Length: 341
Ligand SMILES: O=C1C=CC(S(=O)(=O)O)=CC1(O)O
Ligand SMILES: [Fe+2]
Figure 1 (tube, rainbow, N blue to C red):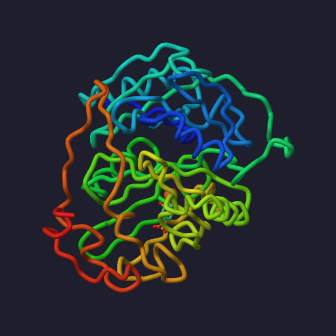
Figure 2: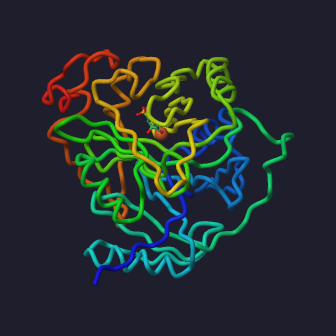
């Protein structure tokens, strides 16, 4: 008798381990404009202006940078138990998380998915102050809310199939006749809550935050340029092929990647069709055909297991970077060169 999947509402929260809390605070609060809704010497709770829950992201001080958890909200309290049963039935590690372990979040279950990612499911959550119209507080890139996770994993097909079993639908893919190189999957009616990027994993590729318009993305670039902190800008600004969103990728002081993201599209109808990009289409990742910088394909944040230890990396047999020529400007690199980089 198959164990029913939990009813996942959306990607809702995440926790990153950072090594210098003050430096991280400068980047995420002073430069980018997140609100530090609660903080002490060990942890900062960051919040976007359109967030209705307690926070959008947790930065926790630690000796080694890493991804501690990706968290999804589920529709009912019973769905927390359903999540535990679903993962336990597959022999995957699960951990009960008492209410309040994360400020503003009720009891949760934390699991390791089949690809080594630390994933948490919760329902009860405190509503935070309504700042959506507090324009007097808005600063920096005026981050609105958390939008999605993107993770690096060596077998995108397997990850896609498992999350489809978990009830996620697929909005877009990048593929060729041989394989799928990347997939975008959703529960909330937008392009994605989780994306799988082919590469050595389990590693976090990025966490994306919605901003009101492309203007806020350009402002983030101007702010970082003004303070000569332009080195935090990794890729963009630009227009995505996949998702049609306007985007910018930044790296925080520990190298954690975040994306500022706006104007993707609605996917909520029951017959929404998956759009499949050819891996040779130079517009797939940047609609204007701009190169994808090598670090964007190669670098990510270490995933921490439920025991807090860094997860061992598994490398893919073939990666998009070695297949695609043209817009990426990378030409063809061998897998061996890639693994040496
Ligand atoms: O959110 C995203 C939407 C599109 C893309 S891509 O670079 O266009 O593939 C990457 C991304 O996953 O960060
Ligand atoms: Fe993204």
